[in-house]
Image (tube, rainbow, N blue to C red; front, side, top):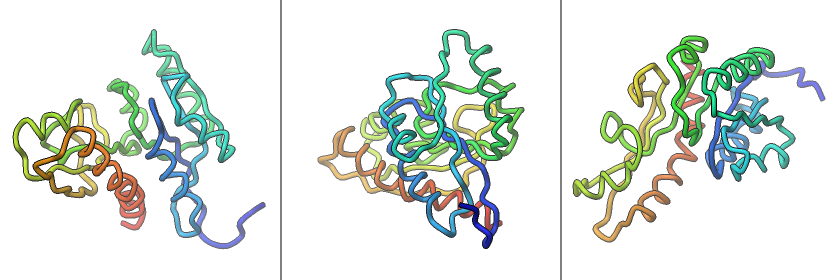
Length: 193
């Protein structure tokens, strides 16, 4: 079925390592008429990633790459992404750090969602660190990826209030709900600029 009306959607790949809940929300977003993206490829470093099932459900091709040798894995991913003419990469719980070389190959075309209000709490265990420091708020951030971990230009953030009874699990769930809304909004924002 060819869409004759409306702008051509930008081909997008989503990189995951786990459950793929952000992937699912991005797929649902991509199916909307006014969405600027079309998800053409799902990439994972984990053959057991639960999120790969969304590839089957929504008929999106997915590839798993073994990261035992990062240089080899990244070369294969770069060629796969370029072959499919992907113009946007969305990291959605992808637990591998991309090399400088990889990032350079797709400069300004890689987005990430991070479960904290950057620049606070880069890296892992963000919820635990926010709770340990008695923060009043945490949240999530969508940003461009550059060669420094969680340091690229921020596109959008959403603040989430921390209650005194919050645990890492309850905080993580509250923030995840916001992540699912924030990622599509951030994508719409960059393509409406």
